[in-house]
Image: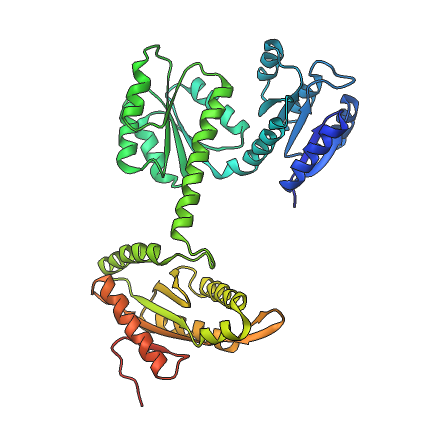
Length: 419
């Protein structure tokens, strides 16, 4: 079900542009051109995700529509052609998401960014740390206006407990002056546990000394704000740091993911698998490491083309996610895949691998209307205490034996094959 956007705008060209922007973000749009229309619409229906409001309407020249829409609890972005300081202060005195001067085409690009943030900010959890309930509640209100998920703490000690409880926190906003553990100590402790790529820290303080900003930054904070801060600057700093974290996450995902199948790539698999295997050995958890190869894959490419081959690789990845959802899966390159699984015992692990192989063998993959049948060969090693590189080599040797012995089978490392 699409989200609904109320567009309050008396200029038809501008309303059309906003509607196009909204549709690109999958919004359903309702347009009102006067305050009377707004009141009529909201008297019967207030189920809107957000609203864009023109400051001056034919029957509401001085921003009266803003209060009307806000009174129904609808998060609102004000579009204004007036940009004097009095108008700005009047807009900012109300709990709006933002205001955007209608100066040029950049205004509409910015509007799209703001609407996108409103749709996605709930995925970003921010921890607010301040011993003053009034100051803490003010920041929480500003963040919730922008649709962020918010967690709070009264001091640094409590903040560390909340960080341990909520693994999805992306940012900490911390005051300097607090009992038990102040903001500088908290920032230092956070940086002992979390890197800048994992978590952003913004320090805040009402102290007039300029040294506090430097102290925060030198102890690992990403930014600093002096209280009382302007909401516009607050939002800019928050958004900039969240976007930086999200961009880093995208870069890391691209670096660790196979572009075609969206499985882990070789480098990421080797790193993650080595860590997991150490944990399995330490906790005595049964596990297996398997190498997987598509039989006669070259014939697929030669007979049907490389696009068909790519489609086969994508489908194999889908089956791997289905069968090994709790495991670590990867495309190592070409037609070669790998999986690391843990389970109840060796029989359980073997059966899961063989069920995967058998389902592939009886399925067909439609490519361009042509059903393609394929099989897989697997080599597997169970509960080895050897180093990861040696385990990979042993699984690869077992895979080679599966190929030599007729393909479409699972071969266990060290097991004798019958003639």
